[in-house]
Amino acid sequence: MKKYEEINATLAYLFHKATIEDPELLEKLPEDTVVIMQIEGYEVFNKWARRISLKHPREKGRRVIYAVFKLSPQLPPRQMTSHRIATSKVKEVELQSA
Image 1 (cartoon, rainbow, N blue to C red):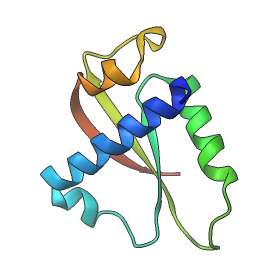
Image 2 (cartoon, rainbow, N blue to C red):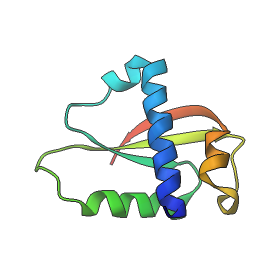
Image 3 (cartoon, rainbow, N blue to C red):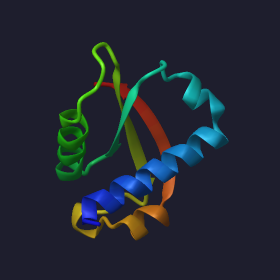
């Protein structure tokens, strides 16, 4: 798996964990929503995640939401790895409309 794919998989796991810990987060998502993982301050990954997610076909009318992770400590982009993200504290997951 490539670096960004590993980071995306880690974020998907952390998002799932966040929805278990805070069920209201899941209630904020309309049915059939495409959720794209993003990391605050890591624009290279964020652009990659948007490009990859949006190139897959989806049904017309499905909403796209960004799940923006705010990590503590905030890592410099060159230090972002799936392991470092998994061991960071998730301060917040903010849902933003695309």
